Every structure is written in C-alpha cells, then in structure tokens.
Length: 208
Image 1: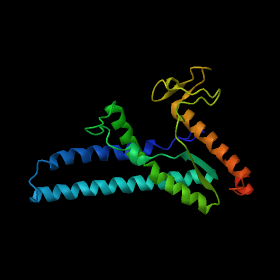
Image 2: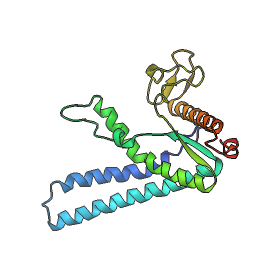
Image 3: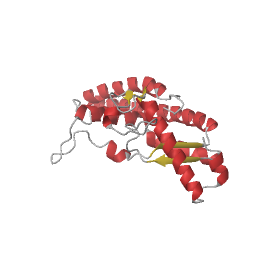
Image 4: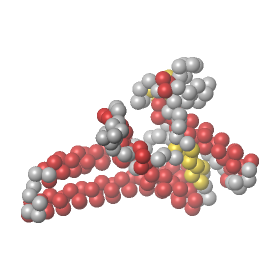
C-alpha cells in the first residue's frame, strides 16, 4: 500500500492463491507416489509447471504495478527488510523454538506472495532510468509509530488492520499508517542527504 492509499496487492492474491492451493494438493499426492514411476514423473512435471506459472504471473503483476508507481513518483521510500531472516522457518530450531508459530507462518506466506525484494529491485532500476531513486529506510517501529504525535508503542497496533494511538487517539488503517511513516522517514533521509550533498539538489526538489 502507498501512503496515498493506493493498493496493489489484491490482484496478486486473487490470481496466485488458487494456484498455490492447487500446488499444495499435488505435493501431498506426490509424497505418496513411488519415486521414478510414470505417475511420479507426470506429477512432478505438473507441479513444476504450476511453480513456473506462479512465478510468471507474479513477475507480470509486479512489472505492471512498479511501472505504474514510477510514472507518478520520482522518489519512493520502502522498508529495508531482511527477507532472509523474516522468512526463516516459523517453527525455529530445536535449540531455539519459535513462539506464535501460526502468525509467523502467515507473515511468511504474505511476504513470499508479494515478493517485496523483487518489487524493490524493479522499482530501483525503473526509477534510475527516469532519473529518480529508491530510498530504503529502517523497518523498525514503522507499524507502531503515530504520525500525528510520534508516540511509539506496540499497543498502537490493536489488530492486523487497525491502528489507534494510545496517546492521542489517532485512528487509521494500519498499513496506510505504516506507509505514511515510511514516506516521512524517506523524506527525512532525502533532506539529510541533501544537506551533506550526497544527493543532487534537483533530485531532492523533485522528490515525492
């Protein structure tokens, strides 16, 4: 979701989720096939085709979405996520078992579905071609910070979709609230870089 409320995730979910569910079903059947048999090879090929189709659909949707975003914005801010760590096994390890496994597994599925790393790479090179830039900001507390009074608390995020500031009472969609914090962090970074001459003044003046 962008800070102006524009949302790009629905098409990804609508088109890919049914294929993902189909893949899971086939993978369960695949486990019970005799390795090397005709049915085993046929099912393996079918699963591979589904994976390829999912990748192609995701790439097509991301290309269209990032192209649309770059048409209207010169500078774009996004969280600098450590995706490798975030999508590690939700169960943890034997030595360090994880907690809240169901919620973490759900987050992993969402991250893999939306492929923020791939989207970021597309945005970066498309913006560069247009003379713009992608600004990556620290992800800490973006979902817990009130953009009105600056109060930071995990209690501000009362649900996955609702943000209510404990201090000033500001209410917003949680994703939209986080997007606004990311936008502000990016603008602050631009201002700081401009002051130290790390960015060209022209680029900073045109930043959205």
